Length: 219
Image 1 (cartoon, rainbow, N blue to C red):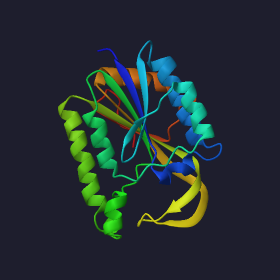
Image 2: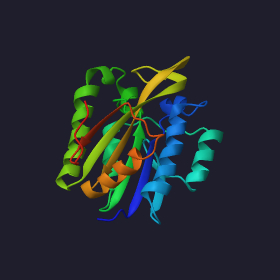
Image 3: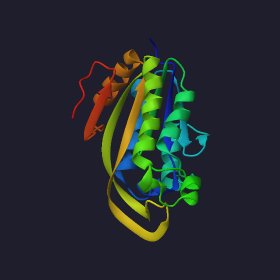
């Protein structure tokens, strides 16, 4: 099968702004990812870049313009939204032959509105309810014969701290925090993407897991 389109989704909930502030590894990896997608994975293939939180917003520009935008503007300003809901929206917009690249810190949290209604909801139900929602989405992908890979990275984070009640505490933190790249595609196209990523010396995940591909999962 041929890759028909590449869609890059970047979570831009406000709590993620710390990954974009300063010369972080996150920004370097995002620039490398866009470059790899344009030059190594895609050959005359359309690439779309989206920001995703409560809403999905398409970035109006090419890869070079996106890299510049990351350095000159406040990127993460969306309303917080459950990870499972973001995956669900991505799944709804997926079409055969597409490759999905989704970058997120993958924190399990309910939506801003749900937290406003119940400040303790992330303590009471975040793990069980939200994990179940994510599992449901990937079962739907599996039924369509779509495979997935997840790559773990770390980056400096220079930003505001949000607690489990989603409250800004006015506390700026500067520390190393994890984030993740999800790749979603049909197995034949997944193998092409994995090969292109691995051939680039700048792509250095700390851990990776693969589901429904020829690669063995790495614990």
